[in-house]
Image (cartoon, rainbow, N blue to C red; front, side, top):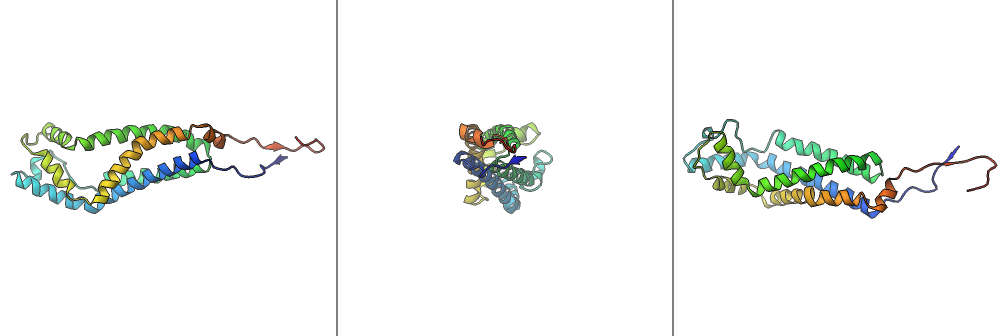
Length: 203
């Protein structure tokens, strides 16, 4: 018969740090979505007011354009955050499939985070290009529109956005590395149960 291990494995600090980074990213993603849900209507109103000041209306923009933060854009990050928390907890419990899945997911998060960071930094440029490509007005002041939208959200929403970008990029790299160091390898290594043979001397 098999003899259980004498004591449970102790989770190393590197794994705890990786778990904390994943949970923090999930938290910031949820905060981003909450900000969009809370202030999306105000952002839409601010955009319409800025367009009116420039002599335009929402109908002048490409069909389907909206500045509200609801819908799939708000709920998808919340769903992903929940999955990320589950993955983090499984990593904390030393589940090998979770670590492998993390090595698949985190590089994708890194790429998406980098793309979103560039999109945020060049928001006016991307907005202007998108409006013009969709047949919207070419002389629209996109930067003024971006500024009007940004003025609606509180400081904590900006902190949530920058925190999410940092954790999605640098944090993802850290998680990948932390789960690959020798201490993590030993923690995730599958334990071979000892076999007890009656009459045999102790190993």
